[in-house]
Amino acid sequence: MPETWANVSGIDLHLELAGTRVRAGLEAALRGAVRSGRLPPGIRLPSSRALATDLGIARNTVAEVYSQLVAEGWLTAQTGSGTCVASRHVLGPPAAEQARPPAAVPRYDLRPGVPDLAAFPRREWLATARKVLAAAPDHLLGYPDPRGLEPLRTALAGYLARARGVTADPGHILICAGFAHGLAAVCRALRADGARTLAVEAYGHQDHRDIAARSGLTLAPVPVDGLGVVIDAASGADAALLTPAHQFPLGVTLHPRRRREVAAWAGVVIEDDYDGEFRYDRQPVGSLQALAPDHVIYAGTASKSLAPGLRLGWLVVPPRLLDAVTAELAAGPSGLDQLTLAEFITSGGYDRQIRRARLAYRRRRDRLTSVLSGLGLQVSGISAGLHAVVEFSRTARECELLARAAGRGLALHGLETYRAPAAARDRTGLVIGYARPPEHAYTTALARLAAVLAPDEPAAPPSVSSGVVAGVSRSLDVIRTSVNTAEGPER
Ligand SMILES: Cc1ncc(COP(=O)(O)O)c(C=O)c1O
Image (cartoon, rainbow, N blue to C red; front, side, top):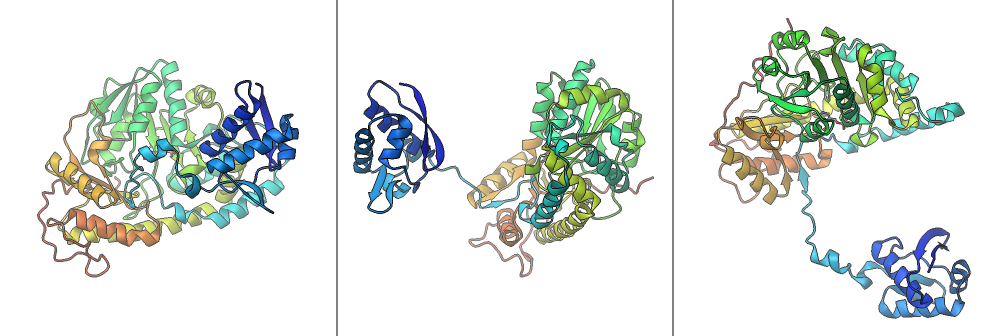
């Protein structure tokens, strides 16, 4: 029997009437559409006459099918309101759904990687998008320039030079759909250019290692110590993926001496400046790219400063690699989003948002550090970014605390999540992201964290606001309190 498009209540619905028996085929097709959710609970079906006309079948057949499905509980029929899809409580969940235990959704999430999405500047962004759309000439709605739209590249050149010290000509800037997209293009371009080995920090983002490995590059983990990445250990590699401003996840800022070593290193450096805007304790550490623009590819993203769902990122690429990386980028983000970000930057909205967010995250960081110091714990990686690290001397401690946190509805990550598989298992601890919970949930998230970390897990989470868990005696075996003490002033 042919597939048919029926116009159901004004909504196009694809009904595949299987088999040769029209009635059975229509029954099965409607049941399938309800079960899969394509016909959601409450939606009104067309009259039997209208559906029969759409499908080219007898009206009686449709009426009989409706009656049958009403009898089975899939549909409801009421005088005056027609035939509707029954609500879920009548139908009950499909069998497969009943059998599967619901996925445990953590109530409180202190994993790193995502900013406070509730703080996205919806009103300002929307006003900017409206303004941009009203003014955009038609040709800007065509296929975007693969390098990214010129207004955004120009706006970013100014912003990056001013805020991150990047040496950036708009012609060397490429727009990508977030860092992950840009990284994939860069790795493929490097591989095509003959690179074989990419050095990666021993602790880093597994997704990024996967992206690099998929391009055909061999990964070589290099250690990170109190001064940052030990670039000398990457001598055999053709390129390196680094997070100099705020090592992810350990949080150390690359020491000035190491910065000079990296700048003088022979290979291509991919500088992931994922949270470069969020520096709290001193003047922002400028980009590494400015020291060696001919062999550093600078990468930035709006994922922390605005929202990861925008999928907006940027690369500043040395001229000799520009065409190769552009060719690998293929399709980038929506042209309208690019224009909106360009206008947001030019109008000062982006700077305002960053200043607001920096202040809010700094307060959260201070509250977190005061909870941790109340427990006698030492925290590192806090001079920048949206996460902090507490290290321990025993691996078992990390597993134990993660399990305890999960039991309290609190999601956390351990350092082990970030260790490159081939790197030595030499550190153990928790990576605590303080940006993710909405403001109203942060106090409870901190209280739960305090309860998890407290030596004698109290029955009720202590109140964070009153006394910041002071008085809880310290017994956790904390080590490496000095990760950031090596951060000397820029020399
Ligand atoms: C180390 C690191 N780099 C970059 C990013 C941003 O990636 P994207 O721009 O693809 O969202 C993240 C996000 O979590 C990250 O953890």
